[in-house]
Image (cartoon, rainbow, N blue to C red; front, side):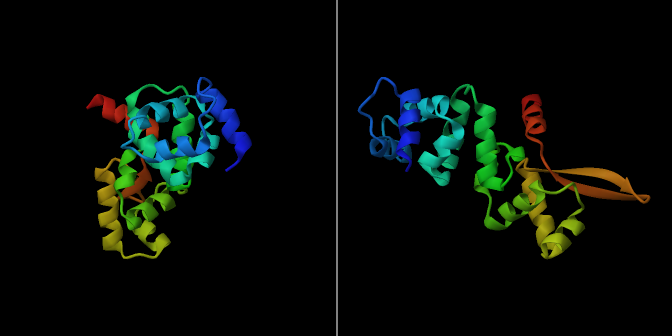
Length: 180
């Protein structure tokens, strides 16, 4: 733990608590059952730098706590926090935030991590690229489409109807969920 990073961020978020130690803060942040957990998490996510917060908390705790409190109120740096979350979970900040990703099995997470870096492709091309059985990839893609993580777009390629798989754009997902 970098004490300089802690001191700078403690002053930003908890200026009125000069005796708050890193150990006490970390314990409360890692303990959802603590009565001060939500309040401390909200203040931390509001005022601390996202990259510093990830370093102080550890990636696993950051991912869990951000998913837990993200919808509770408007955060001024929500886009930056979503970027950090997406980078940790999928390897690309372009993905942003989608809480459904936390429900995925390892094989589905591997599909997502691969597709975040790729252009839209057919399920056959995807199966070939990752070296897995077509049927298992098809089932995985179907699951990810149901969770609004992937989208399938029908298109014509060489006179044949082809389904192209792509990762759902975060803005498209937000718009789609608002329409419902």
